[in-house]
Length: 495
Image: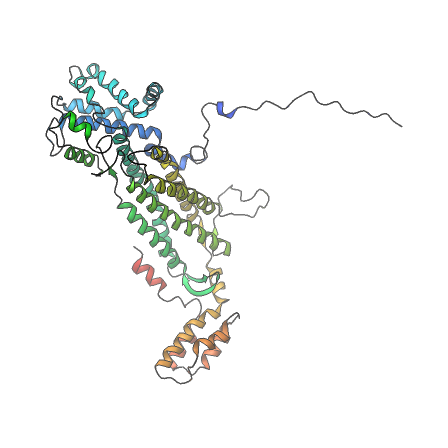
């Protein structure tokens, strides 16, 4: 018997893995800052941590200018003895947030490592710039105003205004234009296909025909209503101190009309003034905006699932992208990935927006910090919505209508004409035409759960004894022409 040997265990261990957390430049943890960065990049200028700090600097600078130079209807200076700033000094101050870039982000982070407080770091950052003003401007009164930076403010005075400016910018400059564009795209498709007959499906079963354009118009109309709500949103802000009482303000400068100063300042930022708050602005306006955006998301989700279904039925065909692969094993596949991607991102966005809305309206007594952590997720909430909008737009752009299949589907379902026939019989019965008894039940016996072709339906109608004009109208009717006012509805009511 031949001798056997057992192979020796390998002395070579598994290869050492690269620690991805140590790779430079840093690898994104989430898909919005990684795989999908290009689609959501415009939001970085509004809803990132850097954007938050830039807005904080902007608010602090504008508050300093107001304290020194007043505001419309507010006598200057608000704080007695404060220097009146020249146009050059104001321009210098406003250049601080405008120039906030990579070097400034790093500098502010360095200051925050010492203060372990983000808003205090912003205060010190601005004071550094004020201290450097003589070198840039020559003779200047700015250093004399240094202690008015963050005067009588709690951090939330700065933060609530910063977030309001951020969300307003993100909504008006990024999200609304993208959302409006995709709805306009959908409305254009609705008008283009306003007359294309479509067999409707209620409960998934054949139902009264419509047109493809009318069904798309319904979704466009719903989406536009939500856009109008978002367009009309209020963005509230407050500046009233540690518990909303102007306590420090009135002790330090009792002569000033601080509510009037606060109102003029907040409105000067382009925001709506909230006169009654605790330490925090109550965030109700945020909950309102997020609820409206979430509702838009859900209607867009309805569009994505409907289009996906029409694709699966063959009513829409997808125009292949050159070089793209639909399946790693099935070469024929052209998958509706844009609409599936949109569905998932809309669901994630809605989950975040719902959490923001529910959490932000509650704060224990005069202040807790749950809002601070929660608001740092505004960017991802809008990011997933924006990514979905981008996918829906790209998906719609690659659709073609299979009109042949639409007509074949209609022609295979003549039983849907049971509705107009029994309705015409009812009207004839009221007009005194004999033999029109039990119209619904007679059509039910003819059509329910059964296939009826054109010949059988016309034969049935011919034997009813209807007035000649009614019989002729029904004889000429087909599933493809039984679309009611669908085309006209698109023309008259799709704004």
